[in-house]
Each structure stands twice: as C-alpha cells, then as structure tokens.
Length: 266
Image (tube, rainbow, N blue to C red; front, side, top):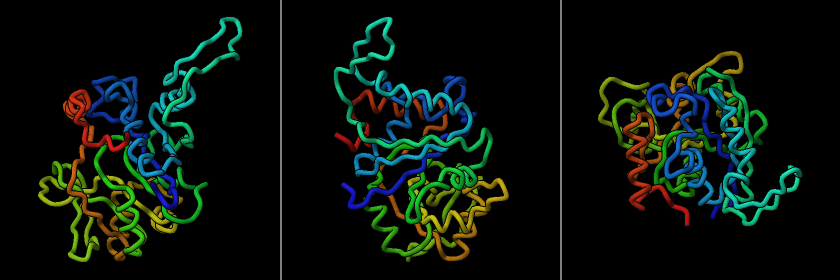
C-alpha cells in the first residue's frame, strides 16, 4: 500500500483509429478485456498500490466513459428496483472499487496529449502527479516507480520498456538521465516510453504551454530531457499496449487463460 496517495491522470481522449474497426462507437479505453474496459484494468493496477484518485482526460466519445462511471453501481452490483419508483434502488452487494475518486475532465475532442495533461491537472495540488495512457497494461510496480522518482529529484520520470519500434525512443544514460527523446522513429531497438509516468506539478506548468496545443511526447519531453530533468525508470517485466485488434485479442486471450500478468490485484 502507498504511504501517500498520488493522483493519476489517464489519457482517454484519442480517436484510436488503428483499433476503431473493433467498435467505432466505443472509445479505445472502453474496449473490453474480460468483460471490463481496459481503462478499468489500468485503474485496478494503480488501486492495487493504494492510488485511487483518478483524473480522466476525456475527448473523443468521452460521454461513453462518463456514462460508465455514472452507472457504475448498476453495472457492477446486483440490485433490486421497484418499478414505478425509479429513485428506490436497493444494491444487494458492494464492489472492490468502493472509495475510488474519479474526476472526468473534458479536455477537448482532438486536443493533443500535452495539452490534455495541462487541462486535466489544473485543479490538482502541487506535488507529484502520475500520468499514463488509457490503452496499455503492465506489471509496473507503482510504489517502486514513485520511490525512484523521488530519489532522483528530477521533474519528470517515464517508465522505459522494450516493445515494438513504433513509439518514441528514449536515449538513457547510465545514471538514468534521459539525454534524448525521439518521437516514433522508423526503426527502434532501444527503450521506449511505456507510460506510467510521474511529473511534478511544476514540470507541467513550466514545460507545457497554456497558449498552444502540444503533444506531451514532443516539445515538453524534449525540453525536459535537454534540461536534465527527465529520468527513466527501467521496467523489465510485462508491458503490452492495445493499439490494434490483434493486440486486443492477445490481452483477451491472456485474461481468459487466467494468466494475465498485469492482474496484480487480488
């Protein structure tokens, strides 16, 4: 359990064009794995370490995510309703997610990721803020990630993983400092940003402009790396994005086999 809960921003606003053929009317974070949205799986990972204060940065089809949480009790619990008395619903059991604090923030339909983070954190207190994507799961130890971030004393930390070469490549020095952040190179054999990031509020305010629409993975990350304020937490365990129908099926098969590595909760 966490010695101090840290808010988690989850980027949920993209159009998810590479996976839209699965269901074009459902935002990617709401596509199901084992009958629950992948967004739920991501939140369960953080909650397993005691971090249950979530800020969802909504955009494309954000109303579907709002609806899910507004109806969460009815969707996850047994209940009795007396017809003709819609206000009288008796829930017959609880659910493990009781106590989660979920803030839904409209950050714009086609806003870029950096600006989504700035909008989503404008009401969050100073201090560390965790940020991740709404389409990837892994066995990242959240407490060790936070301990690493605090020990390094820098403004930002990303989790470095080793999957396919279609993401932004990190050039990591031996001391953990990131010297370069290259956006989605054509070929990549090195570490990539797997999400599961930590930013000090000051990093968001200083490096993400309030008067421009920017991608988190471009100017802000590059500037943080240039200023020696971006470090990498090395994760050697399981990590898997869900960018394509094939990747969604892979995660579904792992869940159905009851060997889903990212299920770190009991």
